[in-house]
Length: 241
Image (cartoon, rainbow, N blue to C red; front, side, top):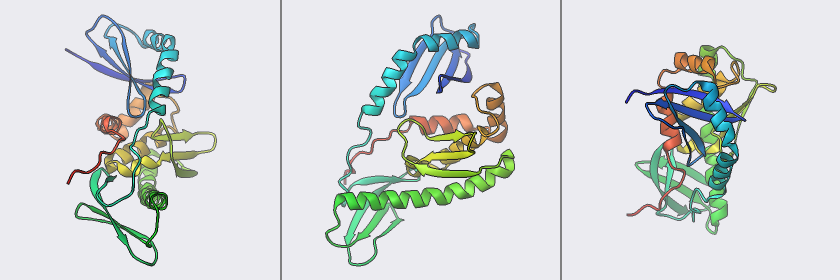
């Protein structure tokens, strides 16, 4: 079966469109971030696909709301034996109670957290998130510098924050980019894709043909990176020793 793909924005929703040798349009909303995917008959033009999505917007938004309300990640107890992800790799958490300044390190499949005795789960969680933010900001600074020269754009400001349904956002009016803190858990290839995606939006706001052509020129394998990121679960299972 021959297929072709397209990319569009409908009411601020990013929509993946796959054209196939089928009779009817099928619209799906997928975890973990509420990705909208449309399988459409090969003979339909973009406007007819867009109209079909518009007609189902209420249903699509209900499905996305349901995913947002769902508990994506079991509450971390922040104890020795749990599994956590750092840059796409799974590490076993090891807590060391030790007086002094808290420290985190990763080595040989272990994420070691040294904290003062009596530090509770909330404090450990906050420490981990602060460390993730630091790691993410360091890599983002390197990637933004790298791609600014390639894309030819000027990023005036950028930051990291927690987001429910997006990996990144771009404000063309302010020139600011935001990146999801969750990206610190993902493979660096996926982070680089998001950086290029959002930086490309500084010169092309929509997900139309020009945006796709620019992405193809900047990062020919962007589709595989996008799929790897969007298909990866947000939940983390308890490590079984």
